[in-house]
Image 1 (cartoon, rainbow, N blue to C red):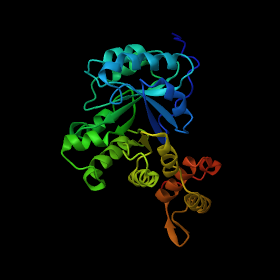
Image 2 (cartoon, helix red, strand yellow; image 1 turned 120 degrees about the horizontal axis):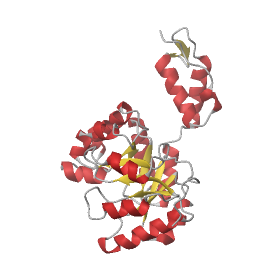
Image 3 (cartoon, rainbow, N blue to C red; image 1 turned 180 degrees about the vertical axis):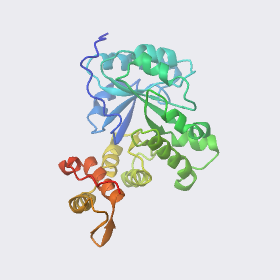
Length: 290
């Protein structure tokens, strides 16, 4: 196994809009997942893999990541029978970008995991329970944690709630607030279980973006495009943001398209341009603090 991590590619875990799961016991699908256009691929060692295939899946993923593969891995939960073996197999693999830790409910253990895997490996804590939501900020603020993700299906089960926008609104907003308070990237929303309804995926992702999420977990390659589009600023948004930045001044509020533009609005416009990759986002248009 190659233990040289000097050629590890840059991680895009913090900026990924779409993160596509692929079962660890299906190595024939690894490269297909990469070709899907997803910002990040997640080789799954947890829910997608039956217990009797855990060892095989772990070996498949470790072999691929030690050679040509580049991906994140969802390991089994801390305290499970498979956690230690997962960590040992993944340590120092050159293609490992990050790990998703499922059922995260407390901050204990993340610092040790970060040390074991290496600081270059991004850790995503998947919040899937009422206790996890309650402690979301503590988890987000723990050294080594790079991003939060929402396990919406398991959370609904734990909370005794239905899986709809209203019942999950508080939990989603709690993750957005915790991430921002801990200065993390915007969190990753949970999966849409429908495999054939592209419009539903797009609608779910768009609603999550409006709440403050920055990406979405995907369970099928056909969901990737809808997720990417939903978390990418539209042409209209880019045009609006460009006009705002061009007209922003350090003299206070200005007027754009008949609306007041002050410092927070101008900053939001710059963020949109940055997400869109516009060079105008890096221009020196900062307003003076009143």
